[in-house]
Each structure stands twice: as C-alpha cells, then as structure tokens.
Figure 1 (cartoon, rainbow, N blue to C red):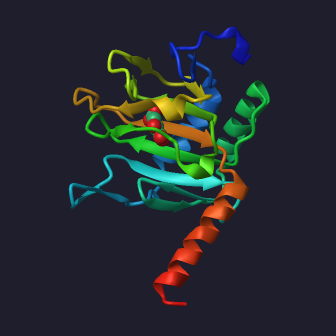
Figure 2 (cartoon, helix red, strand yellow; figure 1 turned 45 degrees about the vertical axis):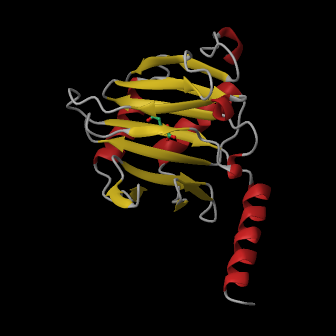
Length: 218
Ligand SMILES: O=C(O)CCC(=O)C(=O)O
C-alpha cells in the first residue's frame, strides 16, 4: 500500500499522504470518545523563562504504563488504549505492515490552538522513526520545512479521516507544525501512532537514574 504513493518530500526523508483513510464509523467512534473525554493532561511549556499552558490538550496511550515518552521535557506515561484507538492502530499496522506501541493524542479546541515547529526525534523513538498521523474534525494546515534549506517549505491541508505517514530520515532533516488559524472555529483531533524502542528507553532510564544518584551524592 505504501509503494503506490508519491513521497511528498523532495529529499532527506519520506512523507506519504492518504486522504480519507479512516472510515466514517471508526472516525465517529474515536471522535465521540474524545468529545466526552475529561482526563486531558494539563501540561505547560516554558518559553524564554516564562510558563504557559500548552496551546492544545493532549494525552498519551500505549501497550504498558512503563512506556514513557518525553516530549518538550514533559514526561508522559502511557494510559491503557481506548478500544477505538486500538482498532485504528490494528488497521494501520495491518495495512502498512508496521508495529506501534503508543500514541500521542492532540486535541486542538479551535484555530487558536496550535503545535509549534518541531521534529519527533526523541531518542526513545529510535534512529529513523515511522509515525502514522491520523486527523479527525476540523481541517487544519500541516506545514513542513527543511531544517537547513530555507527554500524547501511546504504545506498540506489535513481533513477528517486523512492519514500521514512520516518515515526514513524525515525527523532528522525536517520540522513540522500546526500553525494557529484563528478563523477555524471547530475542534480537531490528531493521533500520532509511534513506536518507543524499549531497549533505548531502558538505557535512557538507566542513565537518568545514574545521574540522579550522582546528584544525591551516592
Ligand atoms: O496535529 C498534527 O497533525 C501534528 C501532531 C504532531 O506534530 C505531533 O504530535 O508531534
């Protein structure tokens, strides 16, 4: 299925677009689950020494609680999969022959919410991570920029049911973002399925515990 698509990146990575990939029934089930969801995390970010609420709601789900994903210095421990996300994960795994063990869910309440320029290059995702990103709800702009070639900047409009697959060296060489679009009045849900490499996570945890033992003078 992946081979019949054109790579949207001219170089240094791979990005594939599957419009309308999620069927009406599955999209509706996921959407309704998160409309009633009240356990969103209340995370903050620090910009130039000041603390602000994250400009979106988010939560993190996965195969086991010890899966921890550290994103913008925020440690996220996995909650158990809601049934609808598991169905969605199984479908993508089957269609693309890939395996995921967790997903970050972002909820953009309206066009004032956003996701700043970043790449998903955390060490626990391994060297060239594959991410499957599902969009539901309001249409929003997904911008992507090459990290060193300023002329290489593009965008794609993501609509209800669309899927993006990011892979290869994309996270090393490209940033992506969801900019604010103040005219957007409706919410949007985004789910990025990921695979945390357990060996790397264990090594990172070991390093962290050594550092904190040193801090305590042990
Ligand atoms: O909302 C999106 O489409 C992008 C989400 C994203 O960049 C992320 O979760 O890292």
